Amino acid sequence: MPSEYLEELQKLQDDVPRFADDVAFATVEKELGISFADVFELIEREPVAAASIGQVYKARLVSNGDTVALKIQRPNCEDIIALDLYVLRWWSGVGNRITELLNRDIDVQSIIDDFGELIYREIDYVAEAANAQRFSELYAGTTDVFVPKVYTELSTSKVLTMEWIDGCRLTDVATLDRFGLDKTKLVNTLIQCSMGQILANGFFHADPHAGNLLAVPDGRICYLDFGMMSYAETQQRNGFLLAVVHIVNRDWAALARMYQKLGFIPEGTDLNPIVDALEDALPDVLSSEISELNLKNVIGKLGDIMYTFPFSLPPFYIAIIRCLGVLEGLAIQVDPTVRVISEAYPYVASRVLTDSQDDVQEALRRLALTNEGRVRWERLENLLSRAKGSRGYDVAAAVDRLTEYLISEDGGPLLDDLANQLVEAADSLGSESIRYIIESASAILINDEVAAVKAFRSFQSVISKGSNEGVDGIGEGIGEELQDVLPDLTPTMKKFGNILTLLGFSNIGDGDPSKFIPVVRKLSQEPKVQRAASEVVARLGERMISRGIRAAFGLPTPVFEKKIGV
Image (cartoon, rainbow, N blue to C red; front, side):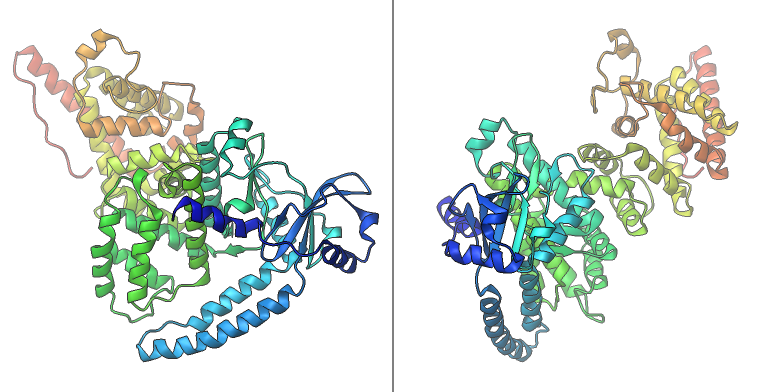
């Protein structure tokens, strides 16, 4: 939509016609049972903002001098909404009859009922105050977003008194520049916070438009309006996360089954036509890199399919889609290069790598492993790399989750794969790395966790030195004489080295190896890992002896076949 239209429509957020001041102040006196002048002193005579439900004054509390935002509901607001909903509900009943004639299972009336419930919650300022306090408690430990203080003793269902916050809209580029704030960082903070609300806590702000947010001079984002909040149960938000994973994997059959599990599609429905429709529609909009994916296009294609087939969307899903759609619209206004999917992916990666819930671990397996349980090295490397961009990402938790899977009943193929990669990488890099691997494997066999960590980190450092590409400066600072001696690594080995660095097994930087000792201890006590370690030691020993004998007699370097199982 052209920017001129957007600017006019945005005025509906906080710049609609005001109602009379004397009516507003009379409402305050009636609701609070006080004389307005005894409690409040206006700092600005005119309302600073006016929206469809209420208008806001900047005032000072007579009792202590605190500056507050005083929000007062429009007169007869509830009566007007009740009449509008009655008319909409009558016409939605007609709409239901039409959809029945078209043999479609769409309950338009239930949509109006959900909308009505949302609106009635929004005009109850007591509920909004409770939402604000709950939101503040959930994100009290977050340093870059906050909620104004609510003065509950001066709030009712029609009057809301909150702490006054000085700041500017995220779309006010001139003021952002004057504050010296980074627009891209603000958008990233907003998106990361929204993803945390939706996928971690389930209690989320469903209407994050520019009028409900402020950027303050210290770089934080302030949420202002809590009338439109929503909640997703654990199963629902994990299902939403899995749906995202299925879309990334282009697994349309699994996506259709997930929609049915979430109740979007009635049980017994033939999913094949839906799978075909997903396969026909979505690859076009998903052909770009993650950094270029446009949420609007993805939602539009999904919407076409959901309209064509018997989908019934629950309120939580509609609220999530609305939230993400509003978020992308705001983000693009602030920074046209931003894509919500790209900015949100670090949080998604962090969740699937660190969350121990079964549904989320299923998401990790589907993203990082093939159907046979083999590692998708490039995908795993990308997950680990992108997760680093998420606030609160704990690499030790990611290592622990991967370790749990490695020693599980399903982890056999992955353990075989890792053993093969260790042998191939060590053998390709010569005797120095073989020594490191043998020391590490031997330490596991004798339960010497500290020695195992040190040896494995040393081996990872050798791999890093053999690669001129990677992350966090891998390959930098290596002498030319060593680069000439070390053989080239295969692409898989380079990814393996990068992955080890992303997991913290690196001598580069100031990582703390002690945090990995519990992981090594857990591995060293697992019989299948001990067997794998013994096999790695034996295979490397055989290769070292074979290479030594052949070198002594001037014979060609041996070629070894990979073992499929350990």
